[in-house]
Length: 347
Image 1 (cartoon, one colour):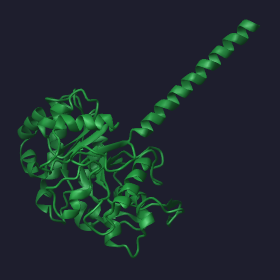
Image 2 (cartoon, helix red, strand yellow; image 1 turned 90 degrees about the horizontal axis):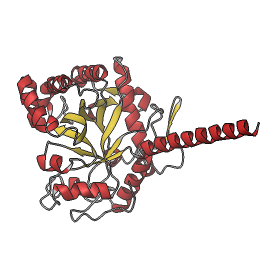
Image 3 (cartoon, one colour; image 1 turned 180 degrees about the vertical axis):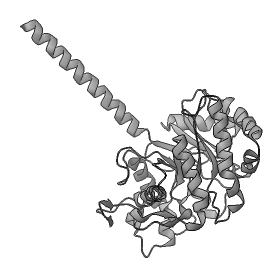
Image 4 (tube, one colour; image 1 turned 30 degrees about the horizontal axis):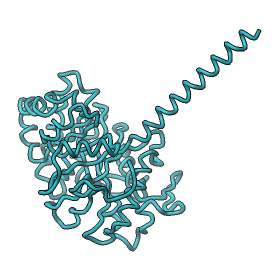
């Protein structure tokens, strides 16, 4: 009898320990949803190997780069940092024109580094808008995505390296209320086939989400606390969903726009979000600190419309970059070029 009791207790003990271990893993997974974009448009930035060490010493486990900079890729070897690898817009036409060009690009910039560099996504183009200033690149995005995808698939890596693109929210025609989110009519012929590809390839859409610009362009209708995650209660009621911050409202308007196409469900990864500390309206150190600190906390949770999974978010950006224009673009950094933290929060 006592032997049976002892065995039962032992079984219960190991069951509890296993559950605690699984809970710890899940919590760790939720804590690890934040990455940081690493831009290089500065003439005073530290070398890539020091930047990678800075990511590691600050517990930043994900990085986005905007072009296949080989100094950065080499510095990332065996770092265990997950990577969004960008394809610059100027390369899209070449990659769309020829499968051979895509094969060469993948060989030089992906296969030469993977798996020692943990390339998670290839972002084919950034903020291409067929109705905006980057319209010249729009005809090439989907074909470039497909050519790179087929090259990666030929290596059997399509489940490990997802091929996608990054959009901004100017291609939304309607974003309020979030449940009525939809893409502009004049971009549907561009975005619908991309969404169709993402459904087929089981790849996420990368979206750059900036409450700062929404607020600074419309401060009469949008409150600063709503933009900074500091509203004490729900600001926007939208059917079954309530929104206490602008970030979730923007993000869910993208989710609704994707759903409205009716092709299938696509995950959204927030590939950029930040707040400038200088250079424009409401661009202050205190506002930036509040927004970014709350954004890191937000990455542990999900949006009202997609409650089942924490949102993967990449903060913009690692450094203040003094060669960017206009002036406000120079002040999005989390670190100074001397590698000092601008803000006290952790990652």
